[in-house]
Image (tube, rainbow, N blue to C red; front, side, top):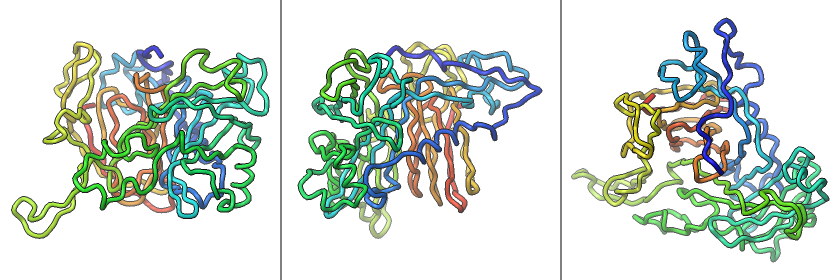
Length: 417
């Protein structure tokens, strides 16, 4: 996929008519799609806090700057750092593919699942290519670099999507552990046991097994790995057997769960230090992000600079590929989000940020303004729990909603913008 220089459209804002964020808010539009997601089996078989939603983007529109810069619609030239209107998201349109992953638990098994969906109406690329689609289509999918595997994907009248949910569990005895909804999904093919595609078990990352290990080397093909991204190479076909028209016509599209969330359950390593730094007792530590010591060269904290970016010192005009080998911080804030309060979808052209949840929780959104080069452009949604943080790179779209009936406390810091 060719790299997008910048967003698809920028909307000029008349200074006399500032944006009405209460009307057709894109954050609420996105999270309504999350609410409408229907999983194959009974709700109690899924861990709600583990669910991660992936919505590939087809088109994106940003708001332009406020007065007096309202006519500067090129994001590369929008250098006014204190303008909080510019590059807020005005609207978006999604592609035909959607995905959800998370933990499921049934009987004595706890493991990952992956749901893949494709738009069922005549506005999808596959329908236009094939002329018409039947009661099932095909999907050839590779998860985490595994071999491409064919899957039959039935039409789901409940959602108007072709949908399949792949569980990393063998099929023996599964039917007897499911309720009525799950058994119906198993019979229709909406739910399929496919441990050959979706790999990993819940016990692969137990704390007492991981002391001082580099977690990146533990079960790297795990579909719910706590620190590695999960990539899906997908090709949809009009015929369930993999034949006929295809989207894309050749090869596959790489989708990916890339949101970098770290905390009590997601870390590079964990261990215990006796007499920490000459103190007393025992300290348990978790390394979250680091380019120090054994993690030197990880590059997790670096920022790749485009020529138009302002660096940590306020300079532009970098050579393509220049990097800052550090995370610059020039602001730190505490935020309290009232119930139903949301930080809108927006981007900062020049800074990286960290959202650390202190109390309560929220739905975190991070996405791509331009093609990242590692996956199809997408918006990603997952739960941000207390003690966990989300780290977004420069230029990432982002937003956060407190969906609960109590306040959420957030520590946010970053730079440079």
